[in-house]
Image (cartoon, rainbow, N blue to C red):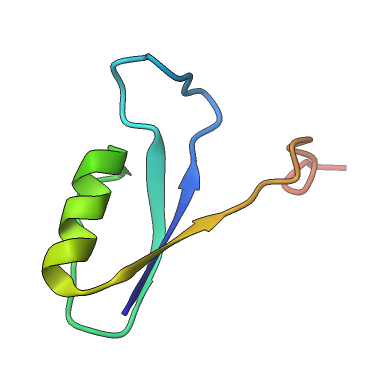
Length: 68
């Protein structure tokens, strides 16, 4: 099982807000109801269900979803 997540754009280190957003889950029977999740919560969930956490990279520009 894999859990795909990406780092939120408006989150900074040391901020008291969840830094990651779950993009998708492959395999298994896992439903995540939170829109944003903390890394500690994410790793604990992955340990309990035997999943691998895949961190998706961003291009850093934010231009992919831009309207032309």
